[in-house]
Length: 178
Image 1 (cartoon, rainbow, N blue to C red):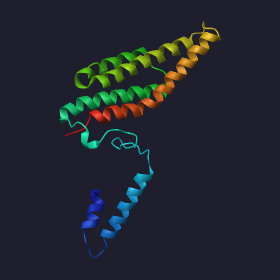
Image 2: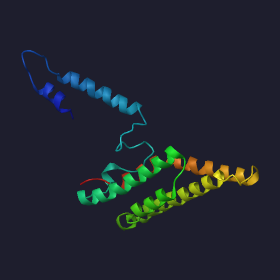
Image 3: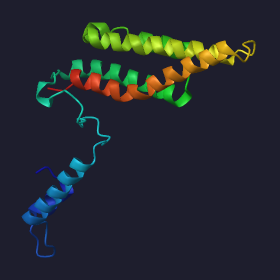
Image 4: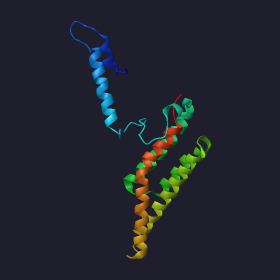
């Protein structure tokens, strides 16, 4: 069983001043942990596989540390970009250019599927930027066109809500240390 260092010491040590942790206590704590993990389906651990995932941990691609560092940086760029969009419900031209620059080399270190995912993120972010800009235009009268833009904007934002989890799944399949 994996234990943190203080609890490992408590288990291994047998002093006359304290009782330490017994094997039966460890088994009880382990069983409580298993029950908790089984009941809690939405743990926020990065490597926790959701029930719906089709990725077997044994089939994940193991990477050398230097390759891992390059790939995880792309994931962090995506995560930060999505967090920015979800926080502001908007994206600036500078944000778009930075995202494009920071993910440009992904096509050389990832497969076509991930490259297409990154391209879709960018295209939807451009759409969000455009609809927000048009909706902020005071010259655009209330009416059919403004309503259409507002609906389009809402749809793009709804799509972005799911993309943090989608991106985790994409990268989880493609990044693992040796």
